[in-house]
Image 1 (cartoon, rainbow, N blue to C red):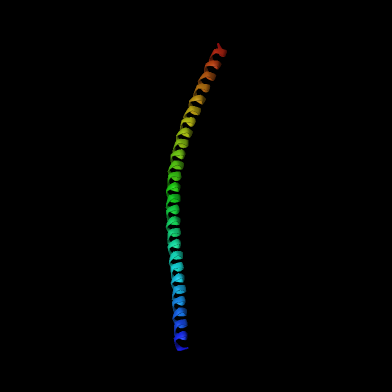
Image 2: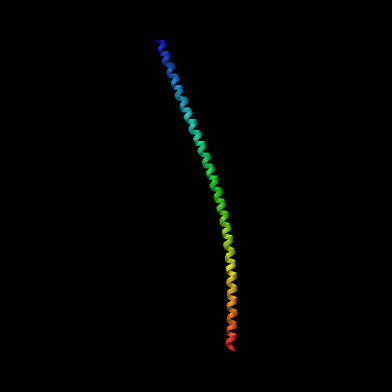
Length: 97
């Protein structure tokens, strides 16, 4: 009876240790997965930051081009106004003769 109880106790102890190890392995697997997920999230965040930086640079370049175009358009308008005034003076001069 003592031997049987000892054998059963030994089997139960071995079973408990096996379950404990399985739980530890599950915890380690969960921790490894969480670490991998965190690394993937960090990589995605870095990629998004780099894309945002490139977009900001492209926006700055576009703004510079737009500013240059506005300056050219303003100069063209001033030239057009000067030509119109000159033509108006020539017309008035020819009409007065």
